[in-house]
Amino acid sequence: MASYGLIGEKLTHSFSAAIHKRFGYDYELKEVRPSELAVFMADPPYKGFNVTIPYKQAVTAYLDEVDPSAAEIGAVNTVVVKKGKRYGYNTDFAGMKFALDAYGIFPAGKDVLILGSGGTAHTALALMNSLGAKRVRIVSRTGAINYENLPIEGKSAQIIINTTPVGMFPDNDGCPVDLDNFPQLQGVFDAVYNPLTTRLVARAKARGIPAGNGLIMLVAQAKFARDLFLGEPCDDGVIYDIHKDIETEKRNIVLVGMSGCGKTTIGKLLAARLGKSFVDTDEQMVSAFGKPIAQTFAEDGEAAFRAAEQGVVKELSAQNGLVIATGGGAPLAAVSRERLRQNAVTVYITRAAQSLDRTGRPLAVSEQRVKDMLIERDPVYRATADFTVSNDGTPLQALEKIIEGLKA
Image (cartoon, rainbow, N blue to C red; front, top):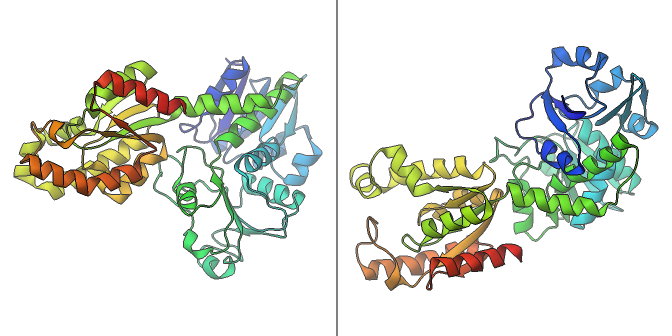
């Protein structure tokens, strides 16, 4: 058994083991059911462990001593076991502050809304007060400010902090609030870290509002927990290094562009270079319908194909560490574009219309039709992509350009 670990009710989404192992010790995920918490806490099998949903408040009843700051917050996320005694701390407080600073979100003098009422919400409330927020309000389903009256009661909000699991894997499509209701908004922080970019964060960024997700908070609080586990501090700079490593490991690389532009060939080369798995949405569609795409278009119609394609995009986009080659029409649906970008860097592969491979492409009935489609789709591809790479040379040349773009 590992010396350190994380307890929670559901941990399939967690990145914590990958983070803590970078500190040089064994760390494991242990799911504990509510009925098992008392037995676990009576004799923890670790030198130290972290605590996540739903136990950050409940665990305090089983501790021998709680750090004064954690007691004031009302939530514990780190437990150190020494000579049979259990000591509780809160490293989420410092982790969240680190994240807000990193994203340029400064609560001093601001009107703040905290979504949620659990342990992380308690941490956020204490942090906002310590940083001098002008007004801090908790939003919950049944509180004085709730999701029904929020558009009226919360319209003056300048900063929103989400501590609910809405938008977290596997419910990647979730978004806790409509940002159109907050005309004075100046910052958004989402404690969710899987997916790498939640809908809430993506929609804030689309409005030009400083926003960020919970991954850097997760890494930061892990570093501060590590200091408690080992009894000695390490430099805070390691937070940025580990954050970059985890994000690079977990992110997908999505290739968009016209059918026949070389996405599959380049994608396989890229996956091999990066050590990621390769998937092709068109291959997934052939498997789903049990027949070639041209036959599916002829027998089932384009509408049926596109509906199924959105389902494939949803499933693949929620995963991590993939290189995904999309069908030419996959990014045309707004919902698919949003999904594709959640966990990914997106690359538009361009190629001259006359060089596009039309073999087996049901919509590419003529070179003129291909040119017309390229004119129609080019703005969509460019709006979807983080950067663009030409495949008018060789696939290997395109590959090297993508690698350069990813480094940048």
